[in-house]
Image (cartoon, rainbow, N blue to C red; front, side, top):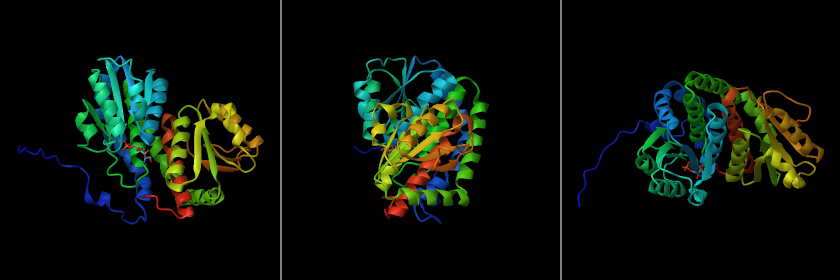
Length: 352
Ligand code: M6R
């Protein structure tokens, strides 16, 4: 039966799908991130406030995504709790079907996805819809299946992401979740302020001098078989994301975990020279993270501290300027660069 196609103009331009001066899409996409965050801070607030006003009326909130997008969900859980005092249930797409007994018609399911085509997320949406829940898509691709299936939508606006590793879309997810959390308490300006700080902090990570430091660090890590990454609070999803990126493109085994879990078993694997990446932002998690770094150091671990200030316990130190509740953003950018240069050093192709 003939159908009448509905046409929609994409706001992306052809240049965005070319590498330009960059050797790899992933690097280009990493360097686009300050602009992505700034754009969200500048123009995202209108659509975000409307959605936040809707969220205020919902009874319970679920966030669902896969891989990197699921870590955005975990970050959303901490941000909503800390800033807006709202509880979020987080599920990974493939587990959502076993975890939906409390979904009602007053539930909101925030489905997070770069592509909007990830099957486990689409299946989750189908199941949630069958229970009458409202679906909010936080999605990068206009017109994708998720975009079309959702009742409400926030377009991430990161532009096309070509590299296999999700970078700028993830940063865009985080930036929107920061704004949403602040919009829930009618303090959008504070969210915009945090994102503006995140832009500055990210720019200073992307300076040549800083990237050179990271490249030196990578030379020490490239022959290792295992890397451990820890953090607490918002740095817990950061640790998970760091480990995933390292595994996905450099093919080194990496494990991300909540710092407090170390002593429940994993510490046994930290021996002389084991690389341990520790996120220590300037927040309520600082001293507990430092204590975990010391435990790893006592076992001979090689401590890479990622923080706004140095400490004697660090063998290597990457400085990340504080960006308040948005510090997760520049921290993730450090993780992306580490994974990227580890991959270059090991001679693999990130984009594939
Ligand atoms: O397109 P999506 O955001 O739904 O994709 C979900 C995951 O497959 C994706 O984030 C994957 O983990 C990335 N390649 C990680 O860099």
